[in-house]
Length: 152
Image (cartoon, rainbow, N blue to C red):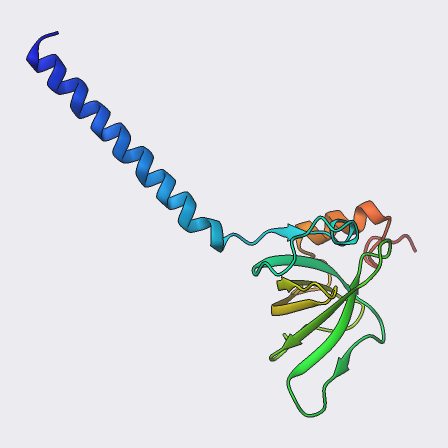
């Protein structure tokens, strides 16, 4: 092997190793920023991790489940997919204007060991026909039909 060829091979190997290290560091850094979505079915069979921040769950806000804690910004409510046990959600903060019972929501936060979901963020759908794709798929699997999809 000539010295020029050996130098080129070393340079290519160094570039490849640097690129591989950069990709590995990027993936490692992003690992904590990923928001994993879990359905209520997965939560019911204990497939969702406990005490891991940043997971998302979705469902319809159960009717007559919304309760406020005195004069604070803390609320409790349940979300359901109409097939699996509802999930108790606790949230402290200002709820979105479009949040209401019998409407779809996505909550981001932590599933605690006691079975309650501590939400850091609540996302509500923005109009009558929109529903987050993950929630829509979960509800379709459960056989639920939204009012706009029901036959007259």
